[in-house]
Image (cartoon, rainbow, N blue to C red):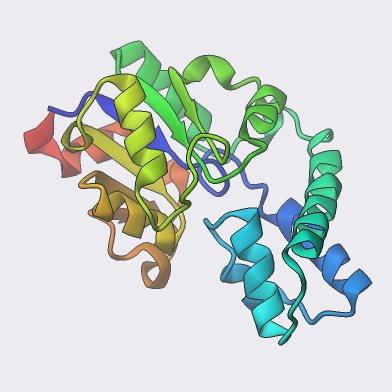
Length: 219
């Protein structure tokens, strides 16, 4: 029986992707690195340090680890400043309704995000009360596609992976859910999350009714 739901943050609960893109673009421009939308897609669902290494590899750049950390921190400072402008109006359509429905039905709910700024984002959205457990980039050392963040969330909820459904919008996020033996709901295009157990184009389509209809033997 499904008792818990685990949500990625960016691209599932809210869309901070544009804020991340703007921050990485600013850093890349300052460093005279090439950075565009296509390269940005490769950063979806992975950690800040992994992201900057992808950008550096693309630009054939090699730097000392301490310099990489400094640049990643600069990017984060740009991004965190932009979060101050987020409001409770910035849920993705359907996300708040689903979280409310899960609460009223008595399911356990956790966040499973690679972001180290997840708590700040949830506070800006006034969403903290929807979650029993907050797993973020500070909770585990290995980021997706390793399943660690989802395993952390399920353990804190006191549930086995087989009793949880993960919502993800990133290819590596679905990979992580599968690696941890979780059921998965993909949000986004077929080419990105088509390997999920069930896929929806948007969160608005991913209602509890639709999810239960797909996993009907598990409820």
